[in-house]
Image (cartoon, rainbow, N blue to C red; front, top):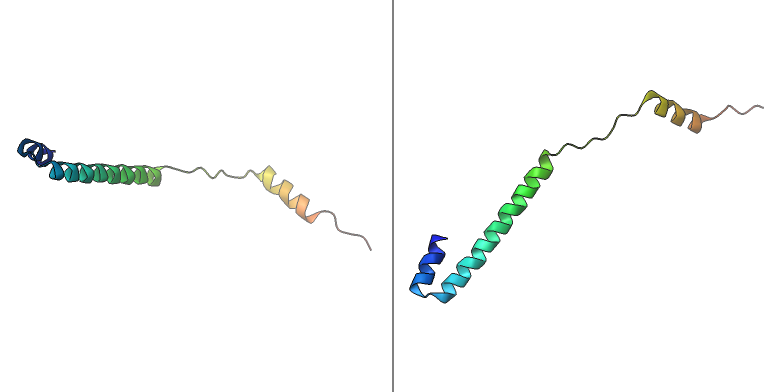
Length: 68
């Protein structure tokens, strides 16, 4: 910010524009890193199957034994 202010004071218009582009890119990168940090810290609940859910699945897949 100080370098942008100095460039504006000195009338270095090209330098002002370049510094502003660099500053915008740096801010965007910081935002991306912050978002990634938040995603990596979030907890994902995968759930825990109950015994009833497990037994229903087992009985549906095996079924009764065929008779000869």
